[in-house]
Length: 113
Length: 113
Image (spheres, rainbow over the protein chains, first blue to last red):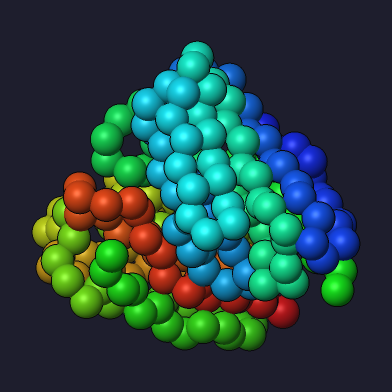
């Protein structure tokens, strides 16, 4: 079965610093989603990547999918307290297109003012 | 993307009782899913809610424990039956229409005492 491993598990950064979160899959990815979750709440969609080498940016967040489609990174530039939360990568289960997802282990981000 | 209204947002229940969680989508969606997020862990898919037929459960989840209904393309319920403290989790519903990313409800935080 496919597994998604995220690193680091948790991260504390000073406001204004850059940071990177990684997501590594045990199998080829047919799509990779990044979500953000505030503590105890639902998931907020950030970005979706599908093609090897693809890179997308939204505001201060950039996500990349490597050429081999087994690893993705999420980079936050000049972090702010509003970036705090749990970041989850997700991938279609069974490699299908139904958006039935498996999720990574999660990365807890804290941003100190 | 579409918006899912999930309720209740939280509940505290006695062991041995059942709780039904509802999700209402503001537009028709092809697929609806139910996830569980145990304390400190990532999301695990419980089942796919099929419109007009029995849900499709993932390994480790059974209909007697988690009966699911989906009477139409915008509504689904998940019941957590005969609850025990081990059922204390956040339960999330998700929808997918085939055009965009999977979107999520705000979650139901369940505590069983």
